[in-house]
Image: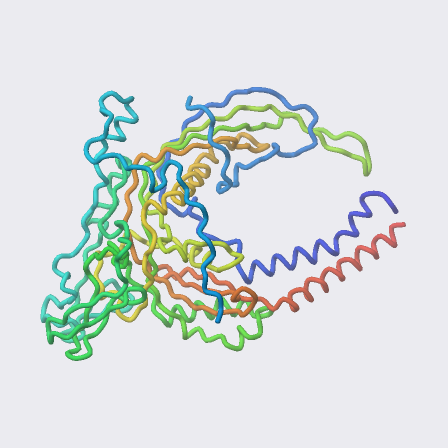
Length: 84
Length: 436
């Protein structure tokens, strides 16, 4: 009875309550909405680039790369230090 | 009598840039541009920002006359871009700025900052109130450009429009006339709220009168840009996935190849809209609901017509109070976001994702046009701490896209959430009790 799987089940109640609250709140207040300018603006782009293998990871338990931000377009990251 | 002594002033700043520094003498710069490296030389020798002159000489006296009979009683024909004379029923329309000033062309060749005359910097001393001398009867007519762009002479009934591009930011280069009629906007708002009634604030439902919707022309800067960006980071491709252990202690492990990823993207952006009012541009959802108005963007700005105040009669307006330079950080942030979105399809092979670590933007050229865009706004003020919260329901005056913020009845929402949570928890406990 005291193993992990069963204890997780106890969280189902609070989790569903919180989830429902936020889903309904956002449906009414739409606080998460804004202009999707990344996709709704006329853009003509030419992409070039390089890909170079620099290493390997063995036996990690994480299913995604740490700090994955490929879809977080609006999250700013640092400017490179050098001008090369 | 209260003590009126003001608090002492903070100590004066005397370092570089303070008023105590002697400004450099006027005249040519002390350094010879020819002796500088090329990037600096280019910047020093670059011509002043070019203005596209969009002002209308024929309308400068404030009177918009019917080209046929000369009457000033002119209205927009609802649902169209056509102006109609209410005296002789003559119909005509203003030119589209896209063709008139070539705004859709040469974006990939843009260099420097091109500012249309209606988007010029706002003069600090420019007043919002404008006074005209009526050529019909000599009376003085005042227009408060904070919220209106037309007025009628009380004496001879001439209609005035503010057409001269005065330096107070009130007259843009172009206007996009309303196409969605009021009845349509009311129906859309009603439909939007009808889907959100169960948990809506009781007072909001009781006072809900969508007929009070107001047609407002809001100020925007429409920006074209010629830009490039560099991105660098790391991406991972999964090479193996395996599980160890059994039963509840089963764990999944991954092997992956790590790549150094670099991308360069050259891109042009056509007609990116930016709010040019400081109030509307503040999108903090904790203190306001301006994100609602932001969401109904974009507009079909290609169809905007040359400024003519007659399009605005019957609607209210908000004045621009932001200049090009003040909007530039926001523009650069959005351009970087667009660059990140553009490269996404080129890094699809990294199935474990990409972590961008560095990004850099180089803006080669931008073109700025000030424009009034049509929005139907319904507002409801919810009382509360810090002045409460103003909820908007907004309808795009061209596309009809509707978005809104409906205030919620907190206790109802909490009750529903707790009820569902309790129900789920009961089932969970039931399963646990029977699995032992």
